[in-house]
Structures are given as C-alpha cells and as structure tokens.
Image 1 (cartoon, rainbow over the protein chains, first blue to last red):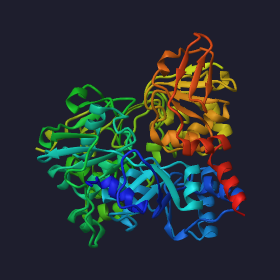
Image 2 (cartoon, rainbow over the protein chains, first blue to last red; image 1 turned 120 degrees about the vertical axis):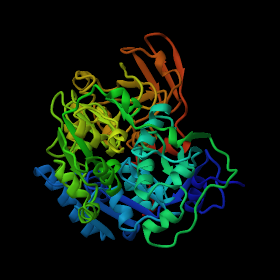
Image 3 (cartoon, chains in turn green, cyan; image 1 turned 180 degrees about the vertical axis):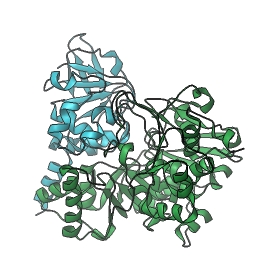
Image 4 (tube, chains in turn blue, cyan; image 1 turned 120 degrees about the horizontal axis):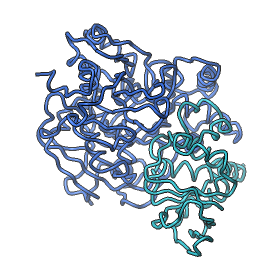
Length: 413
Length: 160
C-alpha cells in the first residue's frame, strides 16, 4: 500500500504498518515542547489537581520565549513558574531566553526525521521541515500528553504543493506561503497535512523550509511536511533516514506551480489571505518595519534583509528581533547584523515580542507597519486600529529603505 | 438562547487578544471580541450560542479563546467549519463545537437551542431544525464529563 510521508510518520507513532486517512488512531509522543505562555503556568496546576506526574520528563522540552524580557509582575511570575516547574518535574531540557521555541528546538538538535512531536503553540508545524510529524495543541491537550504520553489523531490526507524551477532572486519561502494562503485561503489545509515538494523546495536551505512549514498554520493545515534529504542532514550535522512519500501515494489534492513565475507578495490587513503582488501596494507608506518572529527573523531571514540593506539607510523605524540568540551570534560573526545596524536597525530581544502582542513595543493607534511575521489579524500586534502588512524580509527591508512598500528585486539588481 | 452571528475566519486574536494573555480567564473574558463587537462580553447571557461561518478559531493554540467563551456562559459554538486546533481545544474544555453546513441559515439574535449529543439545532425564531455533524464518539464522553481534565480525573481515579 502506497503511503504518504504523513501516513508513514503517523503509522510509526501508532505502532502500525500502515494507516488510512480519516481513521482515528492513538500515537505515542516522542517529544512534547512547551513555551512559557501555554506551558508550565497552565499545566502545573492541572497536574497538581490530578496528582499526576509527567510520563517521561526526558521527552519534554521547555523554552521561554513569550514573556521575555519579563517587564511586569505578571510576566515575571509566568517565567518564574517555568523555572520552578522544570526543576520540580525534572524536565529534561530547558532553554531560558535562548530564542523562539520553533527555532531553538531544531538548532539544539531535538528534531530528526521520523519523529512524532507535539508543541504547545500553533506554529509547531515548523518541525515538519525536518520530516517529523509535529503539530500544535492547547494547554489541556498538553496535559493529556504529559499524563499519558499519547494523543489521538485523525490520520490526515495529504495536499501536495509542488514547485518546479527555482525561486527568483529576492523571492523567498515567505512569498510562497503568502501566495498559497492568498490563493487557497486560510482554511485550505482543512486540518490535513500539506507537503511541499519539487526542485524549488529541495533547493531551499533548512530555515527557509521551516518558514514554509511554519505557515502551514495560516494555511489551516494540521502540519506542513518536507521529505528529508542531504539539506536536512547537513543542518542537523548527522546522518538522517530518508522519510518521504511513496511516489503513487493517493493525495487529497496536488497543486503544481512554476516557482520562477512567483513575484514578492504582500498581505494587507487583517488577514494573511489578503495577498497580492508587492507592486499593487506601492502607495502604502508604513511608519514601521519589523523583522521578527519564528516566521521571519531566523539567520536566513536576517541575511535576506542584509542583502537589501547593505550600504543603504532605513527611512523609517526598523526593528529587528533575531529569532534566536544563536542565530543572532552567527549573524554578528558573519557581519549580517553589522549591516542591519548600519542601516539604522534597532535590535530587540530574541523573543516573540510584538508578533504575538507581547512586550512593550506594541503598535499604537492607527500605526501602519510592514512585518516579516505570520499574522496580521486585527489588534494582534497592538491597537485594533493598527494596520499590518505582511511580507518577506527582503520586502520589509526594501520598504524600510524606500519609505513606501517596495519591490526588493529593484534594489537587488 | 440568543445566537451571536459572526463571519468566516474569526481568529483567536479577536476572540482572546494576546495583550491580555498574561492574565487569567476572568480578566481575558471581558475583552472577548472587543475589536469587532465591543458590546459582546457585557451583553452575552449564559446559554447563548456563537454561530459562525468557515474556519472559526483560526490562528493561535491559545486555549484561552474557547475558555473565554465558556467563561462568558456560551453553551455551544456552531460553525460551517472550525480551525482544527480550536476545535480540539473547545472539546477539551467541554465546550461543544458543532459543525453545521447550514449555520448561515441562523440569523443574529435568533433564539436557538443546541442539542450537542443529538447533533441538532432548534431555531425557535424560525421554527427550523438544523442538523449538525456528530461530535466523534471517542470525544463525546469527554465532552459529557466536562472536558479532558475532569475526564482524566475520572479515569485516573478509577485506576487507583
């Protein structure tokens, strides 16, 4: 029986040779990741109420990223609970103030092809870039995982998004996702698995693949997946098993695109599905450019911004919150961060920050911003009257330079 | 019970804004829907029903979104479809989430009654009865127990 990558991953976790899309199975969880917001502060009291212990503390990873830096009594309390609980419960892996969970998790070697993992955050499909089945769950469902080590799943169908050719210079994974969400809608994924394929995908570095899988969330999929290959192995610095779909495995849908034809995309307020080519937005003049979040401030994202900003000055406030401390150090060492600083960028901490509506830099009333993040829902990044345009790091940087939404391809020539 | 009608792709930031996430649900609930329907939280009555179009609850994994609705007394959510993560969260909190292809036949302010067990909506304003997809059998017991936490409490208590 021909199986998709998603089916193979679920079958392994369910201890079955094959599974059929639509059937309900119980999977053993190899890895449970939590952050400070949906993690310890929520599960600790529930575990206490049950008088239960964590099924296997060595399989749990806690990463603080939401309430950092702590700026008031509540956020300090939330971070303190994370520290206390990790110690009390004997949690195997704790990364405090090291960056955003979806970026820290793979950079510290916790993901590998074949794994079945859950995360207490909606952008957990990011892990699918490593050919691991990973999806987001809420705090009570996480409690269930912590107590039982298992979770139920409706075996997903697979929607294949295949990209032939190669992306043009100045066009990135973010543009691919904004295009797909605009074209198919925020519920196109139908809570099934989306698998990205084709030569244009294979040519992408790991962190760009992570952006594709990250925004499977905005496409409404349970997870986003990419087969493992030598790029996966190089990133993880280890040999990896090949996990991929059988060539004739049945698909729910199979969409094919010419990657070379894709232009930079921008999503207008207040939905990532409000997408049109960048050239349709030339009249929009944001006051703020934001490069941040797991979606848009990894090392690869910072490099894209630097390509555009090298030797240029931002004509608006440019905030950069590198997605992880390790990526920030790498960007510093190679000169990328120096280019951003010289262009006028202000550096913010390695945390979720404005993207998720946390911290002290929220958008004021009527602010217009362009952002490399994943969501521009009304009021998400600050005042309900603020307007957020989503774009790639290239386009955010080009906009910062031009003073209005701009096509990065013109600056990269 | 009053139906509160919403459109497609209602997201979790609208249901439970991120800037209040540091607080408990008692403090989040008054801000439920404040960016699109500021009067909602103060006007909603226990037993009311949220009715929506496609992909209700898109976005975050934050359980505070269904928790805020439950805290305000919402008895059930009826939608053409749900974001999968929100759907699981709602049921895990014991808040019935019902998929109903005809959800948009319900008008804002209609008096409706939801029978989650039977998968049926009675619209007392129009006299119509609408069918919903059944909540999967393996989850219905959990919903009846009031959610995953009391369900686990029962299971663990039994095994001790």
